[in-house]
Length: 374
Image (cartoon, rainbow, N blue to C red; front, side, top):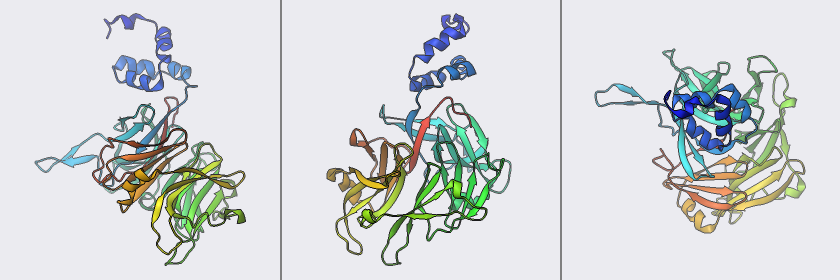
């Protein structure tokens, strides 16, 4: 590289040239050689592109059978590099980020916010499994280990992160909260006092939202609950049931509803099957996306899956919903591809889903930034 003419240009000139590239091209250039990587990860260059909007990507969670090692023919375990698959909807391309800079075994990404990915990792220094929650930026290969938690939280808890990287691990019985500012480098623990196991909880606008089934063993009855982080007491979380008379039977027409973050901090999405009747176990005619304005508490229909697309989901016994913001993704067993709803462009299929033999995958939105530090 020393003999290349580009190496004779001053760093300021190179920074000016590369700063004119889109963020996805800058990421590609970083992998060309060590010189480009050092140039494009320097503090000076990061400051130049600090106002660049992030790349809105979809990150896939690893399958449950995924491990960071495999057995070779002689019976010995062979380490393979851990990575995370991501999808760029603007370019309709799949690629992956290596996670080999993390000193953990079997990292399991579970959530993301503001350019950081949060994952569970097993310590490589301990003989027994000891899970840690880690915040990392795979673009800068930097990470931060959050205060230690017991392994039970990784098995039973849902990790929630908001736009200012406040973190909550929520279960049916308890919740852990971490912001790094309320009590330095400590988790705060609260009793959840929810009527049932929280379904698809979402952390946004300094509030947690979750669906709970308050019905009978024979018939589900879903309600929407919320809790403001400012209302956390010393012992428990103060959950409030959100409901209005004008909502009518909004929860009765949706089968197996899920929540996702909407666009901005004032929209909440609820997605589920649109019931064809009000019978005990009705069939669904399609998948419906409803949007709740958290300021006016009014619902509106945001999207409805086309019937020809829904036929593929009718044949599957199970499907997953993930994403958020302007895009919602759907996967189903034996599908081999994803369905995507785009708020502006409508519905389409996504082919080439990697690493999932049964086609059933889960994921989360990853707003990739070169400037975000853990």
